[in-house]
Length: 384
Image (cartoon, rainbow, N blue to C red; front, side, top):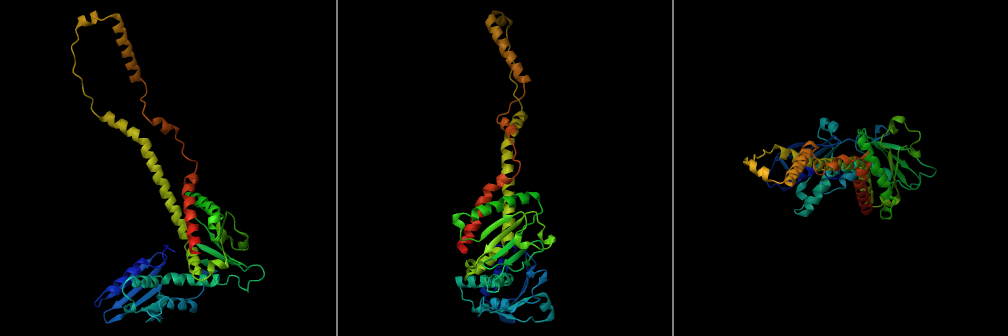
């Protein structure tokens, strides 16, 4: 998924504008979002009561084949159950719309009450794409502790929303295991993600997160994926597994568990991106502090030196001076010459030479990783 929110922000804004308008208005707008999601909103002054919303979204693929060319019946039932009095799934008006969009909804926004309740109901309508995407995974997770799984475990089910982000679901007698294949383009991202996964396992095994799904990271494929194609198991970031039990899919917990699993790739990418930005900011700040003494020296050298006026010295004064004063002046003059010929010493510059850069950015990432992974598990524990 492209974002952590269920509701589409752009779709929510358009529906709120239609619902709050007083007079007739004409709206024919297309909205494109991350992940090849396409919304088409139509509202005509000739039919001011109803608003038509068409949705096109990539569907989850099972074992490389789409589970249906159209939405299954249980998915349509879930969509109609969002707001039964306000929205209704209808057949497309023409063949072109039927080929382009998987679902067309007929909305009666005039039935939505004014106030805070309207914002909540429109947010629920704007999350219809999340309902469509999570419907298949819900059907799989509902079968935890199913009587059909008696001996051993079922064959892994490969689910794909994005071509580079597949994950496997393995049914077992007492749990369902979700295995994510982590792939990264940059070597630095692999280092950051590896440190994050290791911290995630440590935090997951703590007492504070004992109710959260058990997390395991391994650089090699888990035993449940034996027999799968080599192309599907080729990764550079390892494998992350979550054990889902019947406790995590009871009642409203099912929606939260499904949404967390669907957003796991997005969460990891966001963490890696944030960590790299943090490292770059720290390096730039440190470099500016180290180079600041050099800038101060350059500023002093650029300033013009003021010439002191010459003073006339009488020869008789030199003759009257004692030998001790002449030797003292000679000693001071020699010290001045030595200081001029010696190297320029810059304050704080020795720390710059003693600075040792870290061998890898794993240590820098570790401080952030522990806090971020702890927040993820605490959030999951509070929701599940």
